Image 1: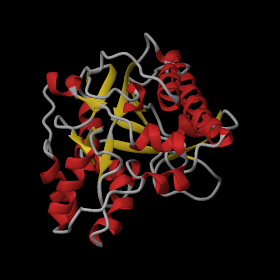
Image 2 (image 1 turned 180 degrees about the vertical axis):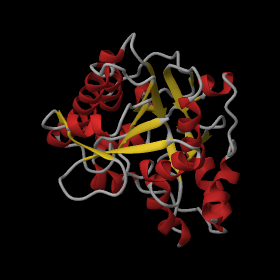
Image 3 (image 1 turned 120 degrees about the horizontal axis):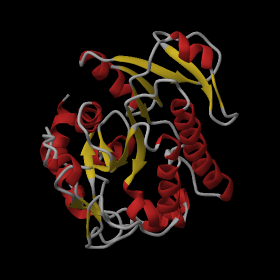
Image 4 (image 1 turned 60 degrees about the vertical axis):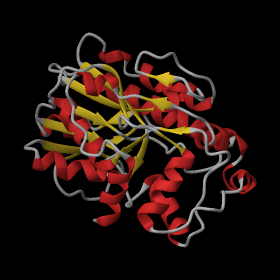
Length: 301
């Protein structure tokens, strides 16, 4: 397949591209800016609502799209301006790309659109599947609007919303931020540690996206491992793999000072016990179903 990929330079996208090529697919990057690019690429400017149609025609028929671009939820404090940037980057970019693909004489057969388990909000001990109702809060509102932005592709293309959990790899994301503290023996649980963390290894996340290109799965797809853990269990397991103590809890007040109360509450203290039912029911096999093997694999490499 010729696969158009947005967000190809990000944490997940940069791992996806070489795996796509190794799997026999032809990745085409959707890029911003005006400088030279390596390999097949198409220019776009989601904030201006433009895609280089001539460049798109030049690369040939697009068989599939994997859309990962968007402002990071936890990159900055949630000021009103930052919340607007987060919402706009996801909704505007997704709608632009979906509309452009829908208007092609031969639309792609599949569109995998980035999403997040923030859709479910803070749900305590509730067991969540792709059929669970949306939650409350800013993250849930963003994800709901984000998923609705693929509407132009309805009835033309198979669309799967990649409701991604906490992606684990030492190269980026949450784990990369925590590792320096845990390696010093200064890592600890966040808050009471009873909140559920639904995670997935970067290896499995990339493998699942490539697998979804060829399997008739549509709608919401939880990209999480089948064994969520509490924050306390995550903390203990990471300390075990690193052979470091995890005695000192992370002060909530320090997180408030750095990230703000709303972001801290919704992304770090909220609880979401999410199951990857759509993947499991269709036969996807996880390489890292358990947390300790997942952490051992990325920290060993």
